[in-house]
Length: 186
Image (cartoon, rainbow, N blue to C red):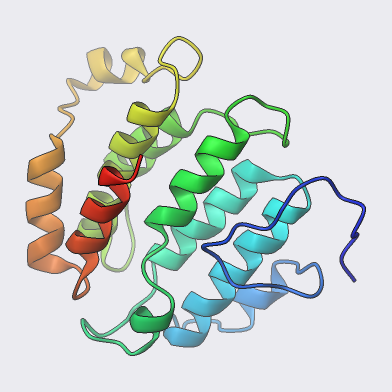
C-alpha cells in the first residue's frame, strides 16, 4: 500500500501505481522483454520515485528502453518512450530534496559507452540522448561528465543530432518525434 503521507507527487508521465513494487515485477518476465515488461518497468520506476528513490527510478527507465517492442507496438501509443518521465524526474530531483539522484550525466555516459547485451546499439544511442538531456538540465558543476573516462579511453561523445539520426534508423516509430517534443518543452 502506498504511503499517502509521502511528500513526493507521482510522475505524471508514468503509470499510476496503487502499491509499492519490488524487483519481482520485472523479473517475472524472465527473458520476455515485450510489452508487459515495458509496462512493468515503467510502473516500477513510478513506485521507486514515490519511495523517494529517483536514481533507482531512472534505472527502471533504462529497463523500459531495453524492451523488445515492434517498431509500431500498440503500447507505445498509450505509453510513449519514457524520455518525458526522465526529464520530469531530473527536474524534480536535481536539488536532492526528493531523494538520492546520483549523477545521471555520468551514469548515462557510462551506460552508453559500455552497453552490452541484446539490442546494445539502439540502447546505447538512447543512453546518449538521455546523457544529452541530463547534461542540459543539470548544473555541470554538480553533475559533471566523467573526464577521466573521456581522457583514458579517448571517448568520443556523439552529438545530439547524430544520436537522433541513429535512433531514427533503429528505434521505435515516433521515438524521435517524442524526443524532440520533450527537448522543446524544457
